[in-house]
Length: 166
Image (cartoon, rainbow, N blue to C red; front, side, top):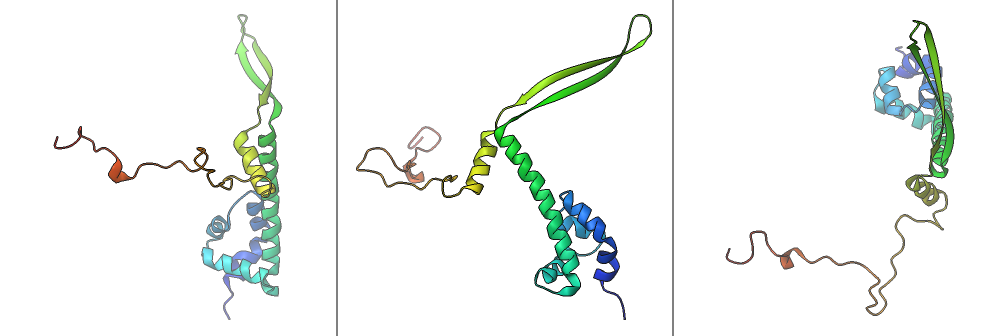
């Protein structure tokens, strides 16, 4: 009996699959590296998640590896949302007037300010009850100007070309 793609392409590469997923590769990219159809690899992962013993090793490895990548991105997003400092070191070699090679080392402290977009994204996903990207609209209170901005309908807008009969 012929072996399945799982036995020939997936199982022997389980460590590589884990490494690729930890590095942020998508399941579609991994399928391409394994030279199998995306739908085939997706089926194996799904079957493992549904409890099929034959594919549980793949499913668990893929899930754990994706969590590693997700944790790294989450940490980077948090760091960017809060801002951070780092030291930048530049090394440059120059020849002095006597023909000697001299290495110049420049060290600079850099400050990356907090990024409001990253902070907004973090808060809207971590605390959706308190923070939301699109706040609930309150009904306008008796013509006080609070409410939705209305744009004129297309028919009410002046036409290009200077007006009527033009």
